[in-house]
Image (cartoon, rainbow, N blue to C red; front, side):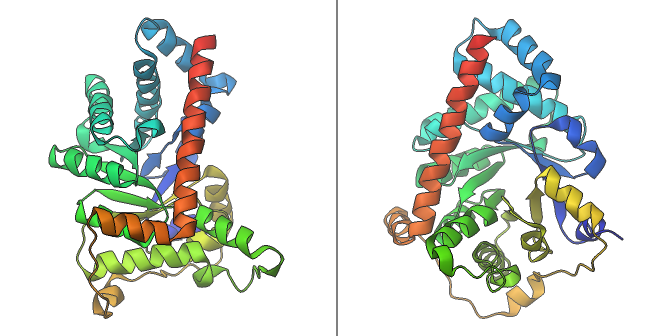
Length: 315
């Protein structure tokens, strides 16, 4: 049995791509997209017709609506290929505006529903800022499920659990990137791999906290740099994996065992943790890595949203 099939026995495998033509070969349960992945996909010739038809049909509408219709167009194509859910992201420029995030999310859901897609097949991706978490809390109360992204710290995960969000996406690879860059020449790749990888350690801590305290929010490790990070998180609720790494897993016959264990987490003594807004902001501020990577991620997704707008204007 290859590692991809082995992984699917104890973890829900999700494809991290906007390239829906690549999806079928890996048979993932769910799929995730983000502004950067959609931007990458729409620049490929095979997706030009989807871009052109969306723009032609809706070009008189405000740009933000055209963007949402394009995102939903990709999402519908992805849902035709997979049995589960697709994650579609709210514009990152709204990351500090709770009410605007809620409004935008509701429109995305309405656009999916107009295409006959059931609400339970869509996760609205929102950056895990305090304002984003509060928006997600309101959306969940209205029956709209959310995926809290750009999650780098334990305090973000705790606040998401308190808000009863459906799912969180802790970013393994970007955490690893930060610590590797900080260490510079002193970085020891072998010593900081597998269970000792800082990104793996972050997700493991979050997973154990959720399972110990019976928090229903799903944990989906994201942003992987190598398959060692993936295999070190085998047993996590879900893992969202880029097509290149899915291919590497499918090509490997190495033995794969679960690394995370809900039963063990329940039996471990862990302190209860809760955050109000002030406590959350202070805890995030104390974590230089999370503060920097959250800000950088929002800037990057916002920049790609602007590039997507320019592409649309040029059609």
